Length: 615
Image (cartoon, rainbow, N blue to C red):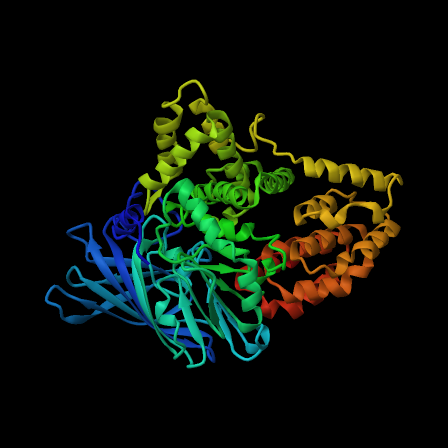
């Protein structure tokens, strides 16, 4: 599509590949960025469903920073490397020597490539292995259509290295192109221009002209159909869920338009959605131009579309402006959660936005009581841990509350200008928390002195827990739900008189989550009979009910809970249930269910749940 002048300027900025956060020390990469960076990579890969591997080569276009360097270091994990070729100054290709080091449990294996001269390009011929942490391979029976296999990637945080030899750090950005070969009846898509994927023929070409961090390189392949929602948005999905997804998410264009008005023009051209099989371990993944989405949010009533708002918001915070290391994750997720809620307010109204704030804040406050204090800081110190450990509601919701606090203190009008300028200033760049603090100090705190001190901002970012004056969002709707709850619990009101027909999913979640954890079996049974909670088709509501029921020993849920745990792989909706089952004496039952469900779970979910049963 034709971009506006502002979006065009951003897109052109995206062609810059300079490493803007060289002062950042990313402990999770082997890459020698001070010597050389990959400015463009080209993938030529065959999708082999039989052997569950990608096979082919990646070609890196190199920009040398150190005139005496002759070595390129790439990140890999569980890759078999066949050979490396390089193009010299005269344009000829030569064989390069390489060493693949011993595998580290977190960082994978360091691939060191040595050249006789500073290479213009380097090709690594390789194949992934079935256990690649960033890929999931599904048999036809594990898909909605039951007719074709399915494969998809999940590269965040450092899983791109499990299917591409790459400088796997968000401190650098790279453009890419790809040729992907699949069986003729399988469609491939990527986080790129997907116009070449509209004809299903097994031979697909892709181009991503804007530079992105490697964790945003993504691929999917399966029995995918395509349907447009607007001039800028469309759905890729298996036929069985295509129409329902279009109906659920047809407000996406409105979300884009509202965000454009608030924070500057969308810079990526199209914004399409790929509906993944239920095994996808997350709600969504913000891969540029093509967000990956779990089918568990297709509720039939648009009650869970805040997920789409979140992934869309990443087009500004995360994809456009990126954390330089995974210890700075809150810069991605805190800003995204804030922008997500602003989008929801613009499209669906202030009342719904505040309800979502209140639910998230309540979840965060509960979490803060259960995790170590150092892990409740926004600027997290991983100290060598897997960056997947950085993902909790702390960077998301504490980061969001920090920004809500700033908005409340400075006023929305001034704060909106600050956020919009921040996105424009750092467009297509990566930054550290320290750099953000300096930008905040200069462009907000000192611009409007006497409102928020630098010490207060640093308390939010570097100290554990929540400041005493942190926002505590509340909703009148929840107050009314609480009143009805108490009236029922004390016998003053019958279940059939509760105004549940008008409740949103947020009110339902508040109701269930705030019921006593020792509710009598008779009351549990009456609730279930009145509202059919055990058979709920809303995944979030069902999860909340199952968590309550496991804790209260309500046995009637277990056949449905078996189907829930076996049928989906979204970690948010299964991991807490496994933990609760173990805690409440159902370990053997849970383990048997897990053994049946495990082959259909993503490797990320498998690793998390394996650890639960190993403790």
